[in-house]
Length: 291
Image (cartoon, rainbow, N blue to C red; front, top):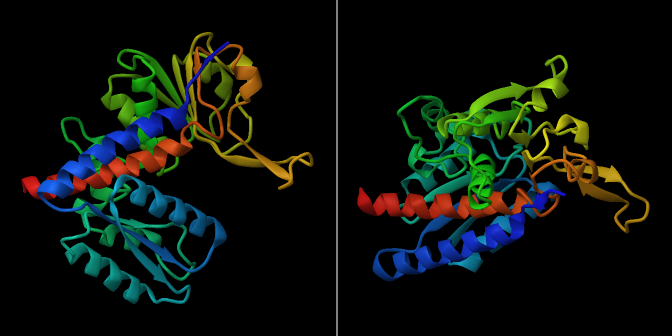
């Protein structure tokens, strides 16, 4: 049976480390500040934002709450981002996606100062991530969390074959670049890949980020491989009060009999994403002091 990687426990360790760094910074310089911007009242976005704001409070980061109406103009949102860029008490800016249809997300993300881009989605940060010998100021939180889970579980990446299932800008692409930087040999499998199982089967490390419930089965996995499941999919479950349950992109029961390491859903990658956001914010605050 696979060793289950406990993302909750590892994320709790990271939060403790971040809290200690925040306390040290606050006593000598300033309290790190994270601006969380939400536009409109989408229930799922509000849930995520509240979770991030609560996490800030727990580790001592000052949360700057910016709640904007659904019908705000693109120009007004850009002005809000510029205001936060100029505020020395704000070390990180996060704009919760998706934004309303009338606003160009790419334009808004590009307006965030690269020094405060704690989500790591600025084209310059992604560009530096892709280049040999360059380091981005920030790495996207979920991919960074995947790498941290591997490293803290004692999984060697250097020289290993890694397969990333999915090629999104948020997870698939950046995590493949991080694996490459860590000296893995990387393949990316996506919706147009013929016979994906045969490629996944060669991997020592699998990062599943396709958004397809339980698509990866036990017979796709090389015995002993490390499998990080980024997927969060809801499937109908009449036995639950909510009527559904969350599953990953990996068939957990099946894969756990073959893999060497496996993250559960929920309780695997999810808690790490918020942990990395807090870490990026503190790093931004420390960088401000050095400069």
